[in-house]
Image (cartoon, rainbow, N blue to C red; front, side, top):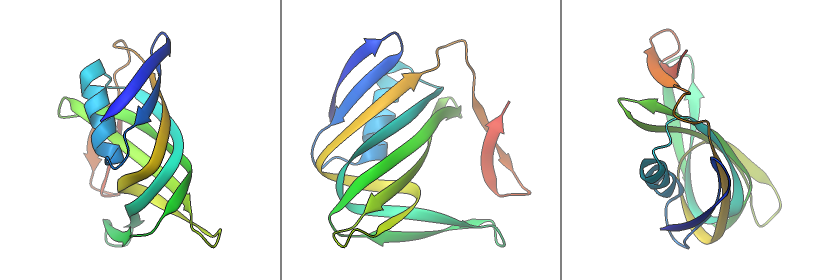
Length: 143
């Protein structure tokens, strides 16, 4: 699903295997390493992705799937925990073949080419939980 190298204490370089789903692979990596607080950045190529856009008026997401080859120009996010498991909050910008860009909250994306990520583990001493906020309809940090 992935290969990785720890480049310094708590900092990892990941290469995801072709055709895997990004959030699934990242969650598996976080579970393997016990990462419950951290940050993620990356780039790569995908051929299918579902983005989410929050409609605050109704406190729910609108999902849209794109099935085309795209370059990930930026993937950024954070790792926290909800119900004792890693909780990924990912955003993505992807460029299309006409060089236009689309982006949003990343729900799923399938690699078609490569995906190279940097993951920083904030360490076991850092607790970043999530709680549901009824006003916004979001799972916000519980600090």
